[in-house]
Image 1: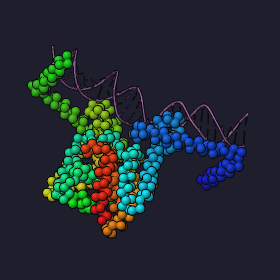
Image 2: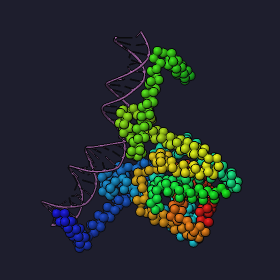
Image 3: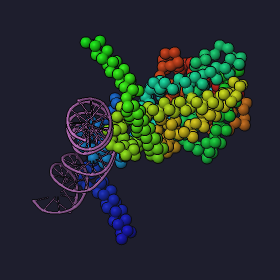
Image 4: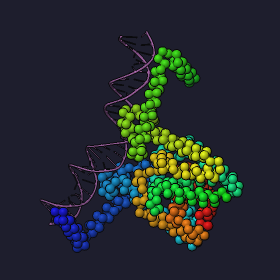
Length: 229
Length: 229
DNA sequence: AGCAATTAATTAACGGTGTTAGTAAATATA
DNA sequence: TATATTTACTAACACCGTTAATTAATTGCT
């Protein structure tokens, strides 16, 4: 029974494919496929527009349906659920960023200059394509739009502040812009941590305790030296 | 009229305060305040429990009300809205992290060792208090739980990968763990960017283009040298 | 102790969300 | 033209945050 179903399905698919190119109405299938693609595209276009107007948090299927002038279930004919729509943008974002970095890299031959250039390109992408970047890295939890409004934040930063400050003062680099150094220091730790939280065990299936030893040892004993000595 | 209202308000407050300590029923007010505090506490306790069981995205007022065995509007007698509850945890998180860093710092006298210690403490906090950390830094957008599932991610990392790799090969440091260096490099840029996105113009009211010049110049020309040369 | 005033807690609703079952209309096939 | 299939819709379900109106309980006062 299961085999029969399988065969009949394949037969009908084959028959459709043949008719597609032998009928008088051979353009109909193409037209239908084109129309279906157009609806799918208009869903993505409207969604993207809504996201840039109202943010990820306020995107809804009903708003999309309204924008494309179809009823709600039509959206579900093209995407399994809301998540699937976000996933498309997520992948598009990484594609875009990857392309941008590749292009930027191609403009230089020296490896150091390449590294320099893609770093700036990465930075610019985040600020120019803010909506993409936030989606890609899961930023923008409700209630955390502006970290600056958290009073306890400054007390927390103060600890890092005074510590880094003292290390720099103990070193040789006297003309350092302290506040900026502290900001960078904190940001980089945050980056190490949050990427490790999001891309869990890699590289190489190590636990976070092992990562701790390896990554942080490098960060502290290597990178920081460049700053303070 | 405005003055009168003000005076009468103050008078009644004063009268209440006096009765509070002169009445026969002086314990009633205290008991009521205590009960109100208990409900408030149980809201926070239940919310925290729900968050750790089901994540921030699945926390709802109705679930909280259910857990504390009161009806929904009672929650709104203690918190203005859902956001206010999250804000409490947000601030609690920064308080906790700040305390942890301060305590860690106090165990050492040398500034470098202090910096070393608080870096590890920060790392551990993020992994031990994952729920806190995600809330504090707005991580965890729906659909981005595991970055590892995005196919375009690896192509994007590959660009950074090959570039950093080449720079390291060109340098003197031959025994470097390449994959780990790349991972760290990317993570640190991400940290610089995402903190700059969340704590917008500071320090010192500079635009992101100025930050770009200052922070990235340091990152590239200073920090990276420690890695590759 | 009993009544009025206040406070506490509830029910039920509003407008919104993601998602889907069932139905009517349009279209293609025979 | 009649049948089958595709297409789109209405309407519903089960949630969500939030709040107005109402009932129950408690308190203060005579």
